[in-house]
Length: 225
Image (cartoon, rainbow, N blue to C red; front, side, top):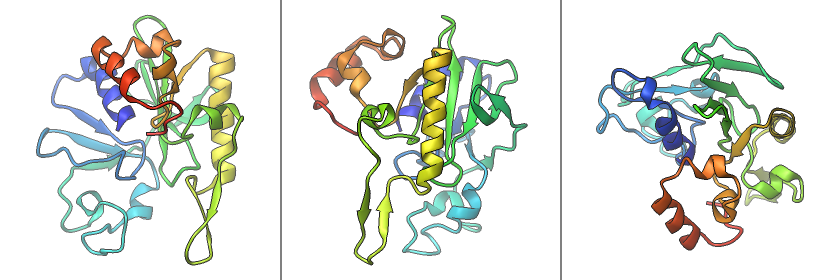
């Protein structure tokens, strides 16, 4: 949920009514019903999420997708599919200027699963920060010093943390371009390397000092959370 809560911290000053909730993608660790806490909230998913995840676990107990979002009858959450308009943003083909003022861009980032998103925020300091979701799960994978693994499943098929590995590779390459050529600071949802080394002052400035200190003490080296 790291990216989700960072998003609220970065842009809630632009919200006049209620809390806006967006989801990188539909995995349980990135989308959680908050209607009971924020009854005026509206969730947003990327294109293709509904078609892939419906009807969810309330109708199909074997489904991994949360029926509170995707059940056509018994869902409890109010949400919509982001519909653009989609325009180019740096190396990416489809991005949405969410507030219409260039401060926050939601980007279609194929690979991890249908509807996967990342987002780029323009800070008051002039810096850009990209919330990388699960486009990539660790800095070593991002840098290319390690490769994304495929592994055998009990039914004899192959599994991978990226459903479409070639598309994920292309998305990671585009993220590298944003960092290298545009100076964007990238935070991946499950990577803590930038927290532990503390070297990226733009990213660490977004965390309360006491929380940062606790995280640096508690997070194990080379952890993927």
